[in-house]
Length: 128
Image (cartoon, rainbow, N blue to C red; front, side):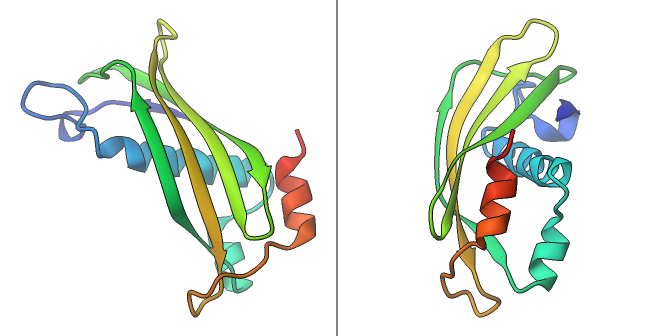
């Protein structure tokens, strides 16, 4: 996923506010799902919600106003009820690493109770 950094993404120093990266990571995971033929809305309509359970981020260098970044999401593991993603954000022109993250999502019912992830979904998401 590619994203241009706008003024509203930054602090008064023109550097991306650290919390905004969570939105970029979310958008990259949504793009990942859509490339695999799934949508968050369709999964929700089938009775499945996927909420962030854990997020570990290491910030490597700042992105600034006017930069173009790329955000990726790779599913590295699928357990009975979790999807674990390795995610990275890069400066597009230079390839400089901006941040690395490992994000775990938990599968929930509409009543917010943990539930197993359907095997066919796990297999489809893990396929390259």
